[in-house]
Length: 206
Image (cartoon, rainbow, N blue to C red; front, side, top):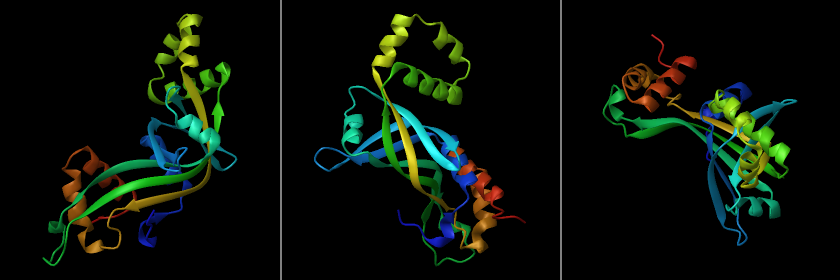
């Protein structure tokens, strides 16, 4: 992605936080004709010996797992809060609108998880991320039912080869930070999310 230095973050803790808070990702790789093929799916982040690993699964009818089996590299993208930026944040009039956003892009190498025990372990990690209380219900379901559900998915492990974290919050325009943060703090969920990140990064402090 286009990644100007003023918006670059090399802090793995920030990248990991974004990926965990905004776990519904877009995974892109090439299909059999070499055209990009995308799937939107939740991914569980693990950190293993200083490296990121992402876990998820496809519905078995989704051909994406076959594409990755043939050509295992892809791009996983996580989008954090994003919002319109009005030129009224500036003290002068010669300004234009823009858009602020936070994102992490991961170059990945995929391997498939096809055995039932591996898929069950993977699902339990996703359950723990999003609804821990459901774990007991999953464990109590009849084996013939859970076996059927597990047979209907293909598990996915993505080794992160490279990652890039972009925090575009107008860092290079300090004259507008206080007003921008004030407007975002009073806005919708995404705007409030950006205001919180501005606070975390010390942008717009009075």
